[in-house]
Length: 123
Image 1 (cartoon, one colour):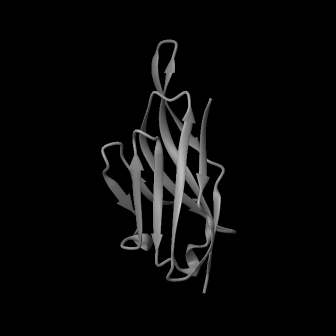
Image 2 (cartoon, helix red, strand yellow):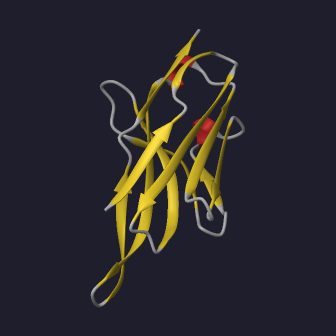
Image 3 (tube, rainbow, N blue to C red):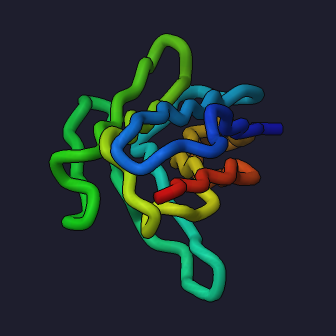
């Protein structure tokens, strides 16, 4: 069993800062790409930022220069530093990871999601 648990969400003022954290636990051989997604009410889930195991990052345009994704491979964690959040960043934020798991005949990559953490940005 593999579990991803997010933390750090809450209420923040526009222009402030907030850090989301996600830790993966369970039967993990290694973790490939990790990322943060978000879903606002009435909207589809969308990518916010991603990071490879080697540390290469990608961001969607609406968070570039404001959010920073990072990870600690030894601790199986991924963080999202949110600087200067805006009210339109209000959403449930989800952690995603492609986790390599041992199978009887080798390794298999399985995509896992956390349950999400609410971020509310007040104006």
